[in-house]
Image 1 (cartoon, one colour):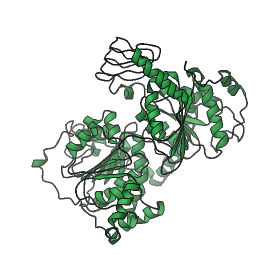
Image 2 (cartoon, rainbow, N blue to C red):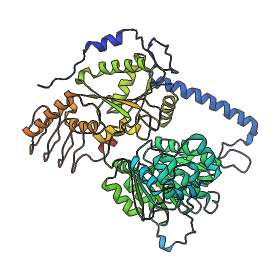
Image 3 (cartoon, rainbow, N blue to C red):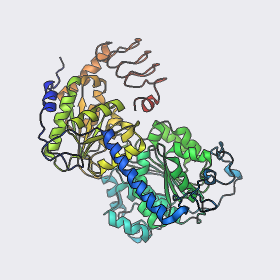
Image 4 (cartoon, one colour):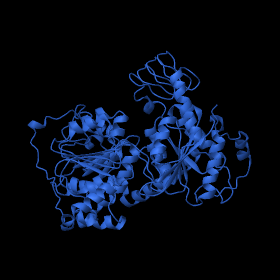
Length: 608
């Protein structure tokens, strides 16, 4: 008989009714150290913030109008004949376009019949320090950092910033912000500066943004000068707006130091400011596939000048169904471009994309090719019954806050948007300073929440998988999986939000009998990272295996049956189990997609 660690259901009532003596981190919320008071709901808090920003905006506009007189025009607006602030959307479109700028503008271009402006790609000169380094020293460094390098004529890695060959305008800021290059930077800089295509299996937090963007800036500085209104030399495609904004934030100072314009385009935000920026002309363009393709179709920008392309988190873009958009966008870019592809995994879809759009690429990987958890993260599995999860979660939060006063930034993952909202409301009523983000939140609210979390004003953030994808916050100390994810891959991506840049972190995961079908995969992840595997988890994995083998039971389903069991299913049946499904069925389970002919991208459209 399987035994689980049980927690008293009455604990939730006790925690809710007491005046909590909890040591919270410093926060802008109305909480006092040692005493927890009820907080207002997130919607009201954001409304107050939004109204405050509107008042500030009105005051700024009034001051500008007083300064400009009747000739005031918002920045970037098209001025009328009499000095007014008239706005002409047609003037924003690329010359020669008709209507909305041409609905077929993003079709592939016949580059064989195009006259291409020559481009420069190779700017790297190996320093004397790199040349003098012994083969043995390099081999020891490669072995120590588990580096895999394949491809012809790959340059030696650089161990110091001064060895990369960057101009002083880049080097000064780089040495001010960092001490030494990360492993991925040491390898990728010489390759990228040599004009080579790159395929890099790189985890979030490895320093890859600086790894691909600084060579991109050098590339741009060595091309023909851009004219007003022309498109970018460098294009960076990413799966989410949060990740796009984070890349923009990291690289903006370097672009500013070198006199380059940077624009970020993404959905969920106003089109007009982004269109205005494109109209001025741009050197570096960062964006998501959907919004960029929209602007290409509408004729607001062009990629004919682009010669340096980065596909960041390529596997995630493919998972989210962006392959058609990515291929259409790449069809707009000259074939002799330089293409850098970064991916956390190396599935067939990513390999196919690399084969179709890269030439003689250098392949580099740091660490094992097998997807594995960061060994700097302590993983703790909390076995609970589903009905006791809420009370155990409150107990865990109290423990985190008590033991980590002033250093308790915590990211909590929930399975659905609804659960995110419900849990956030419940926690705030009990005085826990938390906010949440998910796909239904407006972009302005998401930006505000992330800013509050990054600055430490609100130390607890609740999120769904998709909303948190691309979240780049270095000082998250704790990750809590309130709901276990759909796969071990998602589990690894979740807990990877802590323990970044060689820091230590802790991940807590609630695991109940409803998650039994995923127990075996979780054990593999824990074992590889040399983490403790609870005995209850091992028993649950064994129980789930026996259930799958013997037929339809409470925790599994048999083979070749029409319906799976309550919590899982085998192969070759029409309908998956309630909480999961196997291969070759028409419909996935309630909480997991089917395999062949199954749910497909449903999990990104519906639940999240």
